[in-house]
Length: 302
Image (tube, rainbow, N blue to C red):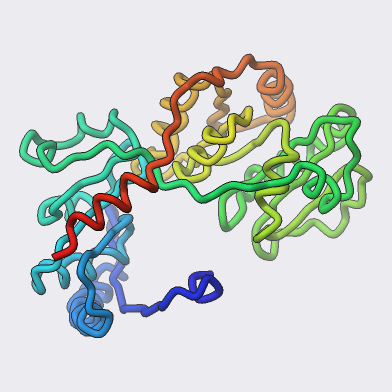
């Protein structure tokens, strides 16, 4: 995806940081110094003046290499709670950017001195509703429900949508992003369009959607909030519970609905119908953090 945008790309070996016991932890320890050395070579080759890190275990050897080379480091945390990789990188970051002001309570007073609450960097969204309807094969007469489960899809959401399809199609046209290899070729219902993945047409589909069912990933939620879309959030209950916290904050600000736990067909259908009727708070301030983050990066150039 980066190369298609004309951006230079370089990969390094990384060891995954797990919070639980796994024999792979012992193997991945070896990858960390390897990735560190590779990252040093990449940063020298790119003549990097600033490192901007978005977290995830892949960021750790790169941030460590930047520290060794005395390159300024800006770390951004997307979620309300702080991931393990960012917890490590925060200690030697020059600046810490946060999507949520609520995240500051998880940081020490020393780290809070480095903090700038920027919000999330949001892509330029320029969708066309008519183009989105045409792409999905939909008409203009019934509302559009967009279901998406993150970049890899979500088996739980896919399954409950399949079970609820007949009932939901009485009210909605449904566009369903199921994830790679997750298409259900047995479904041929009118008003239902399924895709493994949507690339350049996604903004048009966003524009056509009246309600979105999604996971609780911060980046997707910020985009939907920025577009003032109604949403039903179904957080993924894994890791440190970051998606639940993200959902809680957005629901409080925007009046979005949240559905968690073991979903039954009836619960899901009722939640969708209620979410569509919700009076969303469209006056909530959802700032695009891109400009401020770029300004901070430019100021840190050595």
